[in-house]
Image 1 (cartoon, rainbow, N blue to C red):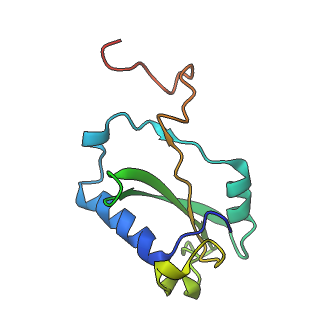
Image 2 (image 1 turned 45 degrees about the vertical axis):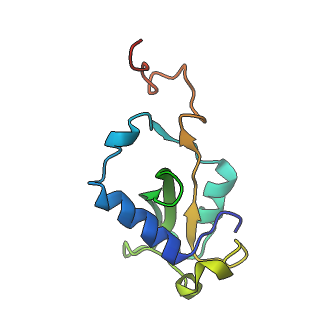
Length: 124
């Protein structure tokens, strides 16, 4: 559970994303996220996971750093968030499984610049 985060932090990030209109107008360089396979396997291994949902968030305390919050989804379409997720963020050092994962490896910096999905830089 290395990348698990507390519910409070996930709510703060996703609320901040929606508060700015759900766009990265000021952060137009964001192209995507790199999701390590090991992390994805952790989510898939959660009990009762039928699907996976990704929420976009930004950290207002860290220069609006983009985050991708991943959560398992059960067969009824409900996010699987464990009760421990209601505990304070100070208590969560990644050792408590909340069912919420922070996959924050945004592109740029983790991009394949030769990919046709990357596109050209401005001014190029």
